[in-house]
Image (cartoon, rainbow, N blue to C red):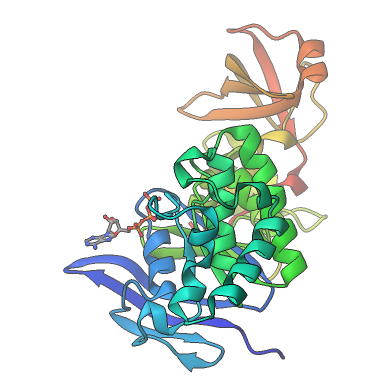
Amino acid sequence: MTQPLVVFDNVVKHFGSYHAVERMNLEIYKGEFVAIMGSSGCGKTTTLRMLAGLDKPSEGEIRLNGERINDLYSWERETPLVWQNLALFPFLNVVENVEFGLRMRGMAKAERRKKSLQWLERLGLEEFAMRDISLLSGGQRQRVALARSLVTEPSILLLDEPLSALDAHLSVRMQGVLTGLQKDLGITFVYVTHSQSEAFAMADRVVIMSRGRVEQIGSPKEVFLEPHNRFVAEFIGGKNILCGTVIGFDDRGLVRVGSEHGEFLARRPEGKSTTPGERVTVCLSAEHIDLTEHPRQRNRLTCTVVGEEFIGSMVNIYLDAGDGLELQVQKPHADYNRLGLRNGQKIVAEWDGACALILRGD
Ligand code: ATP
């Protein structure tokens, strides 16, 4: 089995009595693109800063290539960080900014200039080499910051919200630049973001954090299809949460769940056992609910339409299922138009029990 490039081994970070990161265990492999996501203040940047050598773990060990790096300063480890604000030097022009790291390493002027120009060319910036940083657009500055970090040919690059200052169109284009570079160079990216669409579009694996803890690590597909707990299900959005008690099993092996909204069927995630009497939390994706006046499924709830929201090619439909339960349903425009819904209308929401997933944790 290949050795991980980076290991967080029971890493804790306190700021005084405040626990910003709690017992983090994470392995990152060479050439992987790992995105760290979570709500504001959950410890994403602190995790990245510890890897960069800008904060020191309070407990546990961080290893890079098998070596403990807890006590190394940032300049003693090869873990450059690209910031949201880019931190380019305004008093240096583009190529001088890119050269900076090589200059600090004592590389001769002609050699470092040649290398820096090659990187500017690679990122489509050669014509701006002599330009002032202040005269560049946001996207161009972003690429200069990348060139400045990549010119030293690190095995890993840390990125903290690098696209958050760009408009949506440019951000999508830069996503392509980043993933292209990452795959071409075989470099490991550890990428902190608020944006689920960025993380899911680019990362091989995502790490979802909440209040200093890792809630789930997996591929975007795994996390989307099988969130481990309620936090992750709600964080990634488009999920309905139903609670109930296990009352038995049907002949397909689905779990019969009794709730105040009636009995419904749900599926267990692989490896999870359930016993009658156990309280369970069930997650049901908004796109797995059908709306009909002629229900066929055993899992059904009569609801009242309370609102809708247009999001690109899809429509979110909000339903009141009574007793404080609100459901979100997602449909393509054509289906939504066919349904001809209006607020206040009664409609039956139904779903296949195999699509309702019992969560591993609460
Ligand atoms: P955001 O998405 O808002 O940037 P984050 O997930 O990156 O948030 P961190 O910056 O890692 O969060 O901060 C985690 C927690 O630790 C926050 O509550 C923050 O206020 C606290 N924190 C971070 N740095 C310090 C510090 N130097 N001193 C005290 N508390 C800190």
